[in-house]
Image (cartoon, helix red, strand yellow):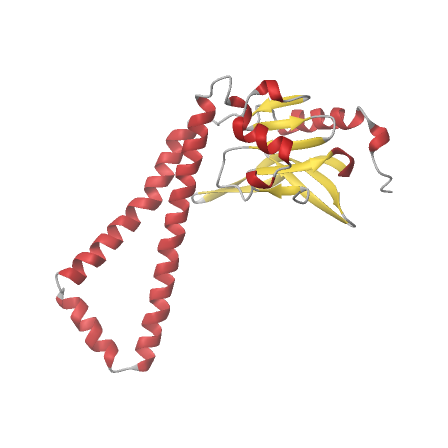
Length: 230
């Protein structure tokens, strides 16, 4: 079993792995909030994907075309680099930066596709599929899975007895050319002798304040299981 906290889908404990893979609300006991895609989410995912993917295609195509046609400027660059170790080293560094940049852009395009595919499934889910993404609070655990792959983590779980504190705070969300502070639920939990934090954004149809209050009520239903942390 994986450690409590953020994880991959395949690392969820077995009961939740089956439920959050196959879906189906009838399998869940306790409170379950299905994940909800933001308005215009699919359109924005497509735009982000094209914004990252098309420049990569253009640069790769231009480079291959220049190589195939033996462009004069390419020959001049090769001749200029052949006589200087310093220039060759600079060229290698610039090439490494370009390759890393192209790989990063391809990764962002892939994340945009994953976001589009998942939110498409969420918005067109059937009764047998809609349980695959959401927030579950049952007698023993808090488990979540959402579909925004631009977040650092899309899946996580916590034992109820490990949760120390629930609070409402803000985090900075970066957008092109600017950033915003958005409200989130911050859950402090015990992992061995350490206290770590899990962040829940407004992915499940509730505001951060309403979601935090719901989790507080859920914790209060069986306070005798809570460890003495003070």
